[in-house]
Image (cartoon, rainbow, N blue to C red; front, side, top):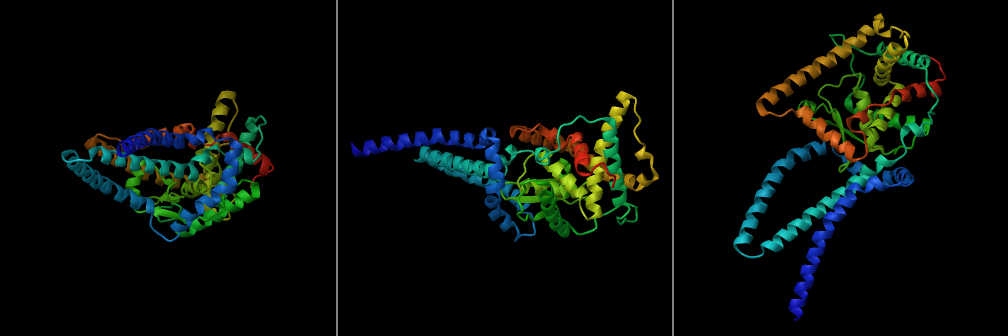
Length: 394
């Protein structure tokens, strides 16, 4: 009787585990959607820096990307593991203990998923719910007119041209970074810290080591130029072509993720504005370029609708070096797109489109607006200019 009673209790426990673990995994995966903003702000400001520091410190000891090496090793390990698991299951079916083996496999799998979901939320997911950078900068909501856009556009233009004149060029007349990858990554950390201190934006001051990815050329097929791994707290940057008008912003963007901001809009806002306030010409060039082209398109749209005239900055002779840099970038991505098209003909899959679809789905699952969340509203840059630049051109 005692043995039978123990057997029933064990079966009941197994059923409870099978029923509860998936529910816990789902709850952990969606928990950030129900986190109040005030709780998220407290967590991101006071707890996240301490939660993230162990893995960030571990990454300091490795020059190579742990994320890249883990992904490269993961596929063959999964294949080998699945084969071994299947062989053992077949032996159990032919013998005894198949149900017990399936139960343990199910339990262990969902425990790993649960741990992963909790880790993700602690290192990234909860950060989606924090107060946005726009609010932290106190940029206001006053109505903007065409003159405001033109003045901000002139500010960005002057900053971009001034910075471009201070950059070195290769034999094709294309500008390049002033420092090495490692030096730039170290500098980006301090730049973000000082910018956020100056403007009252709560950002973790933990040092985060950014890593170059050795297979960056193939990574470019996805059109992804940077990634933050929340499980390893690691920043990975595509270094196949470090185009100067975008690379510094990308580097700062990914560091913002590791320092406590999850929203793509927030990270792009911080990265772009911080680059504009940099002492380094290459970082300023990237920041002002991002703002200039963002505002130029919008100003032309407003002008077309209202009959106004946009100052012809793009036709200035000072823009020729900028256009050389942009043409070099376009040539690189054309080469990548040609390679992607060739692979699509052979394999029947468009890597870029698949990557965009996965990324879009991931962002929407976290309450973001999909790929559109990478775009910073043009009014943010105009309001920043009006509030902090005092209407003065650089």
